[in-house]
Image (tube, rainbow over all chains, first blue to last red):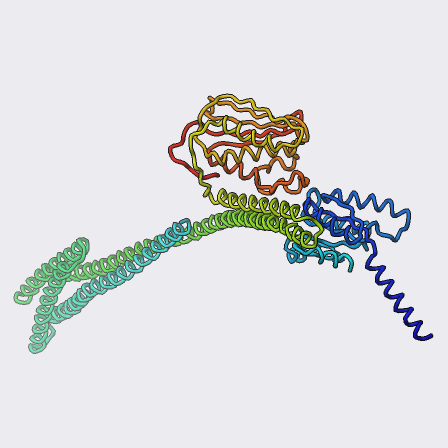
Length: 151
Length: 475
């Protein structure tokens, strides 16, 4: 009895872990390099996530706001995307600006910053990158990115 | 230079002041010593004269007393003889004293420092002569009187002479006294005069010192102003340098970012090809495109540094410019995948000396820009010879999006267009900077403007006159 209950519990844990692994994440990617966009989409979709693409900062904000308007009907607490992956150097609006505006709307939105700029100089300038933003320094392996997003 | 001039002026002034003070002190000392010497000399002269006169007076009184004693006739034989003896001895002493007085006056005359002093002594000498004569007369009369019988008339005469003599001596004495006082006064006057001169020099020195102070104060104010303006100049230069340094830093930062950004997709292609998510050909094509982009960027960055350090070398040759344009557009037309027409309206088919590769680079850059920002429309390329300015003019105008107002003033700068282009318009932000550099190196101008009815126009010129020396420099 005792044995079987602990086995059940183990089984339950395994299932929940598996579920988490296969969990579909809703991801907004903002990136201006066409090749990089294709690659991100390919690897993210392969891992079972849903990807929304924006080609510049402004488009990214627009897509975020649209999604926010939709999801707010469902739940006030739910963020429109699970993760926002931001490139810093984009046309129209930089990644830093976009991150700030998103955090103004949803302070607990998870944002990952993917930038080729020297990360140290980004971090040193105070107020440039909000603290809660996670950082991925380019160039990175696509698997590293997946690991970070699913972490 | 300014400070040098000022310190020279100041040291000159100080030198003059020290010199004047030195001269004053020197003159003062010299004058004091000279004056005291004169006082000593003159008083040395006048004193013995007065002494002599005193002696004469004393002995004359003696003589007269003895004479009167004898003349009263109440003396014994012996006493009378003694009196007579005393009378004559007094006479001798008087004579010798008069002679001494004359001699002293003569010495004084010889030693006198000025003519006026000499005249004084001459006068004294004359007075002594007068005294001598009076005494001689008295002597004769007294002698007569002593040897002869009593004669009231003679006695009266003698008494008169005696008084005369006394008066003469007193006169002389007074005269000497007067002269002594006069000479002392003259010396004092002289001294006063010099004192005034010294005071004058002191005042002049004082005025110079005060004006020097004023001058220095003014100079200080000038120097202060000079320093202030220099400080401002330096601050401005410093600010300019800092701005330039910032521009350089920005360039390096953006350029290195641009050089780094294709690396991410290269890694991505490799990873995806390895895992079999994309096929090999797609990966190789992608990598090749990115490598080419990197190569172009590296070349452009090199060209930028060449232009900025004025080291852009032109390989000039004679070239039919219109043919070069047609060649370029033919190539661009083949790669065109938009509904865009390229129309050439070429005029003035001539040969121009230019760097073929570089001018082609400019043409390609500008026409490509027009293609990039024109979704569908016409790109018109016009050429003409401007006789007035002796230039060949090339105009590229499109019917596209135009240039954003905030970008237009700096359109030929580095990385200015970054952030305003979407991916399919993406360049590296250096093209127009290079165009300007290349055209400037050819001695031409390049301008950009928005058309009234939409689209943008770029115009550049190449000088027709062949320059003797190839100046590979830009400004």
